[in-house]
Image (tube, rainbow, N blue to C red; front, top):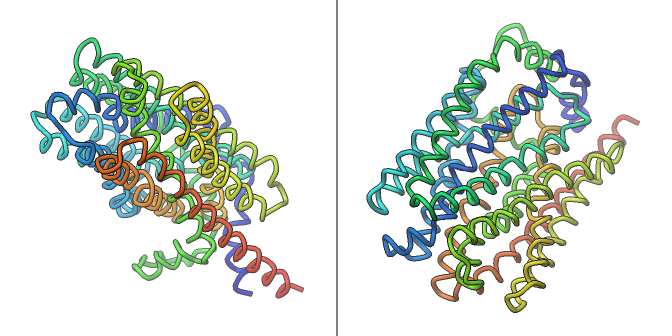
Length: 438
């Protein structure tokens, strides 16, 4: 009965949350907008890498450390801050997060040297740590389950689109006003949007959906039981399958992190592009990655109805396709064919985001779902977005940036292995549960 009892906690969620449809889309739009600000503040740094390297004489390892500092902090603090947000109120927490990362981005603009910039980047990470997990939990709470993979993919794509805007706008501003103004523009955008979110979205209007999901997901005793570390871990890691989701998603995003971080520098060094042109051109590839997140999420939703094993297979296929295309691309000579293949590979570089988020949502009860997404974020950052810039930078200092980018796609093979193992275990678990019911 154990397998069935776990599934019953999540499979009986209401199909249509008790929130007006128009308000649900307003929640999505503003949450998506803040995610854009999140990644604009995070990724504008990549567009000004050449300027910082020239002005401060930084190595690729130091540049990678500045980029990875945010993702590292996000990974380490996502779970505790998500737990705190679940208790203090998600809307209030989201507003505070956006304000903090925007002020810290302004601090980046005022930095005098590498040390000050590094501290400011860590504070940006503190502000952004729980936004992805809490934001997606709020969004999914006001939409029906059959849209979860599509919405998760679209929401995750906001990171890519934010990176696009951050790199393109950041490079444009840096070329005309200097790199400090690039950070200042991102900070202003975040502060304005945080103020709008504070007045447009309220806990009171979200409460019907949140309470409905929690009551339907778990039959609670009259008295609230304290959450111990052991109970939290048991809820977050109920099966080997979900561990494989966390690991596979994180490893797959290593490739995305490497390409997203270093593409402006790659175009600057190997194609001779100026800072603004390299930022704009790199933004196109990140835009392709964001479009791929949405497309892969929608495709997974459409092909997986009534087929619980299919999201695993599709995530596996996305990882293998990404590895193959980018692996070939970075072994070609610089030129149009290489750029085409990089674009094709980038289309699948974030393809597992939607399926992974949907699988986590389906296997974790609603009351702790924000923390589960934080756990997914922890894996995505520690194994992917935080590790990729630094590791790629270290490799670039030793073998050149091209050599480093030739290695990065191979990590997707490990992601594919994790998804294959998770899918096999999940299938065995469902088969055992069906046998018990019979």
